Length: 219
Ligand code: FES
Ligand code: FES
Image (tube, rainbow, N blue to C red; front, side):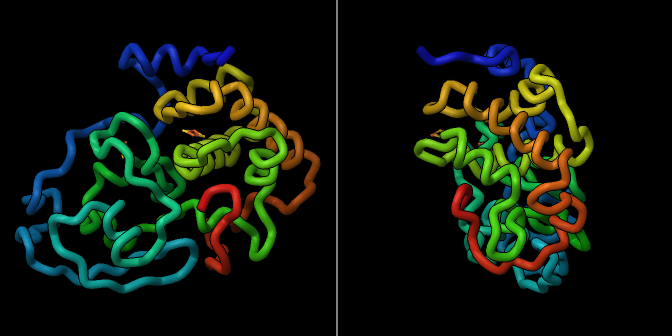
């Protein structure tokens, strides 16, 4: 029988505490002042750092960060889900914090440091968190996995040994229809233990590691 963490129940009630939960309405086309003045359809030159690589792109002012990543940069590890800020499938890290990329206009990310699931791996090696997901069976269909991985990684970066309750709360904005969440929580716990023992590489510098290949666990 599927098990549901406290955080998932909280989320179902619309009161989740996950860092990537909905904070704003879906951005309107054109973006207005929030988009840095970009007109609908106008292309804006945008400079940002994605997975440690400086990127400069011309992007339409109406595009979300999710669309920029997938369509303009080819980083399809980040998934389209509800596009309403409800599912967490689109979560990425902006300046190290989980953000729902379906709700963030690309032009709002000028100069930002963005980390996607592709940026979690250490070169050819999966990160401890990705390995734990594979070992624990925390990814089944895998659609939710990229968003959960980046959100969980942000938690581990700021709280190296989180409690089960802290993990559930951090992931309360990420829906999974397959696993029942227990394996996901166990995987985060296992990764925390691995990182604490200093195996598999320290988390420091992960976000600045250049993309060398897609992660097996999250792509
Ligand atoms: S929350 Fe962004 S796609 Fe669902
Ligand atoms: S593994 Fe399928 S939705 Fe989470």
